[in-house]
Length: 263
Image 1: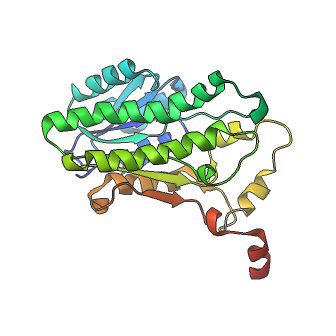
Image 2: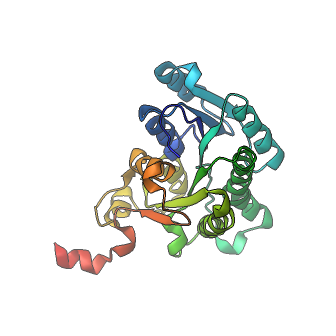
Image 3: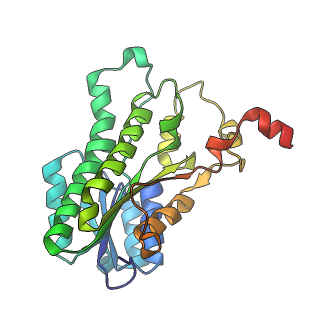
């Protein structure tokens, strides 16, 4: 499978902001036929800018709640009416800042329904279209380094992202017989609206300290994550499936003491 011209539409959930928006731009700049942007509340200004830059013929804009299985299936059917799906990127996400002692079932559903169920429902709908057509496919989910450490006051997010990684590995094994590859990226801190949302409560660490926790000493630009997502969609990664690729600026290998010794 390729993502170049003539191979169809890449479907990107959460495609109107952050990593999702950067992925849409990277794909279209790289020659993808078109992108379907699935987003719950896409910013009209963002959509206008995308349309002005790339043209209406290369964009399908759909307002969609990815936690609604029927709505996702309908959105995917709409996309396939204009041609085949070339790949799927599950970027839709949200974050909640709340002490673990106060969490409710509704709080858990708020994140799991988007991150986990949304990724599954979108993957299911796309996979069904590929299986029916007898064509291969590629799916990239977005996890996070947050799945690897304790994050006080943010419990639903890391456990949802750990679930996304389990989902990725399981679907990769289950769907390999249809030549459907499923991988994920695990970004470190990214300069994005979601990161800003996660830092909103008083008392969070300053951005400079967050950046310093990465070996590279900075947070990522969303386009840097999008570049790896694009690679995982392409034929260049044709022998990769069930893999979670860290794109974390060395977050998981860095210890404060080691950094001090290296200075």
